Image 1: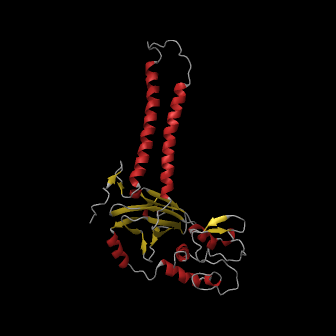
Image 2 (image 1 turned 180 degrees about the vertical axis):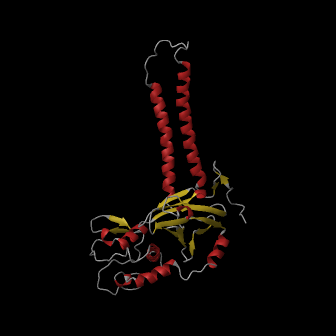
Length: 323
């Protein structure tokens, strides 16, 4: 069933559907860049071909006296092309920035690349392999990471493509505006079964998505799973989180309300406690030591998997959202 207020299904010149809010603008930008580039090429090579033919050796074309030298035409030509292409640059930079600044109330979904599959995890704990179910008309933020080598997550119908790097958290967002099934791929060669590392995004109506979530096995939400891991890995012994008190004598920062806030470091710099900072603090804790604290935290780089670190981050994030 398709909602009557849904956007019409646009098509790119090569037949790839436009299924997200940003897809038409991406196509328009690429189309404008292509058209202007072709116009410049046609003008330059058109004049070149015209003069080659007209003033070829042996032709009786009138060559006349040499014209007086002037820079006006050259300056006008250079300035015009500079302004046009700079306008395209500003347009592209603005579009690029908006792709990495998700709106409020986004649906956060974790995507972990692994040879040779995509592991998807929803906030409620629902998990998928090589499939991604999302609601139509709602912004979705994908948190991307890899467990082994560099991958590349690409959804052509949404005009999205982003590297997925081991040990780093990268994010990108989209808003699907058309119900349907759209393939996604790994577009970075990652080994022998690279071509099989593909799946599909299933865009559903809001009620259908809610029913799909209810029908999936999910023992606990990411926050609850992260809370369990927080206790199991001994994090609660040093860090205060929620209403609990640290049981260890080790002096460690409180995690209550830390997500999204600036953190002063021992080297005098300041960072924002986002997903990347929390990930690095777990896998390489001595790289960014909080001011006033000793560098005594052990690394969890080979203790917790990337999926478990994502659960821990979800729990820490919840401490800044009232639970």
